[in-house]
Image 1 (cartoon, helix red, strand yellow):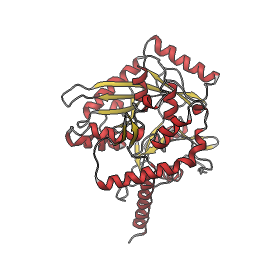
Image 2: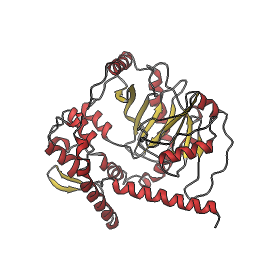
Image 3: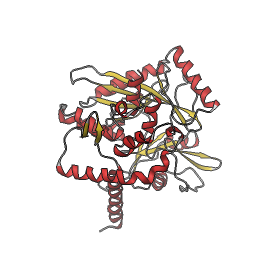
Image 4: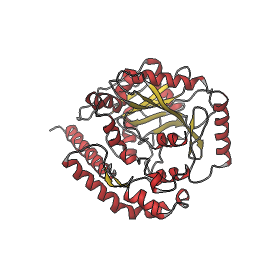
Length: 397
C-alpha cells in the first residue's frame, strides 16, 4: 500500500475517534423533571441510539463535579445552587445558558424548564421535520457542505473561496492554482480558514501577513495557550497554510479559505466585522418563505459581543459589566439602528429569503451574512442551529 494512502487512512481514523469522543461529550436530548414529568425525550429513537445516549448522560453526570468550580463565576453568583444543580447537572443547560435566562427574569425551575436547553436542539429539529420530504435531509446535506452551498449561491452574494484538503474518503482533492486574491488578502485584512463541515465557530481562524510575520487570531473562540505559530519568510501558499491550520485545530479535515470580509460603511466600525444572523422559515412546502428572526452579533472590543435586533434592541449581557468603551460602542450602534435601519440590513433579509427558496424543501434555516456593500456576502447556512438566542428574543419580544 502506498505510504500516502496509509497516512490518509490513519488521519481519517484519528478524525473518526475525535468525532466519537466529541459525541460522547455531548449531552443527550433527555429532559428530567420538567413540566411535571420525570423524563422526556423529543421524538423517537432506536435501541442502539438509546444506549449511546445513556453513555452520554452518565458521562455528563460524572463530569459535572470536575467542572463545579467553573460555575462560581460572576454571571452565576446570584443564582441559587439548587437551580444550578437542577439545570446544569440533572439536565444539561450550559452555565452561560442559565446565566442568560436568569438575566431575562426566569428565576425558578418551573419557568426555566419551559425553554429547551441547546442539548435538545438536534432532537427538536428532527421531530419538527418528520412530516417534510426525506425529513429535509437533502437540504441539510447541502447546508453542511460550505463549498457546495457557495457553489449554488448567486454570484452577487458569493464571496471568493478556495476549498483546501482531502475529501472524506481520503482521495486527494484536485490541485488548484493559487487564486489571485490569496496574496492580496493575506497582506491586507487577512484570510479566514474554517472547517468545511464545521459549526458553532469551531476552528474559524484569521491569518494576516505583517512586518512581524504571520499573525493568527481565532474569531469566535480563543486559541489555546501554547498554540503553534508558523515561522515563514513570506506569505504562505495554500497547502502550507492548510497544514498549519490543521495543526492548530488538531485534525486532518478540509478547510474553506476566503478573504476576510468587512461590513458596510453604513454601520459603525467594529473589529472583527459584524455578522447578521437571519432565521428563515416555511410553515409548509407551499407557503412563502418568511423571516422568523434576525439580529446582529456586534463585537464591542475586549472580547464582548452584543446581540442587537435590527431596530437596536439588545439582549441582556450576563456576567461582567461592559467597560466604558464597550458601553459607548453599544450605544453608538443602538442610536444608528434606532434612527433608521440601514439599507444593507434590508438587503440581507431579501437575500436570505431568496437563498432559502433555492434549497431543497426545508422548514427553517439560520443564515450568517456580512452586511457588506454593494451586496451582502453569505458566510454559511445552518439547518441544525442552536435555539438559545432565538428563545431569548421570543422571551423578550
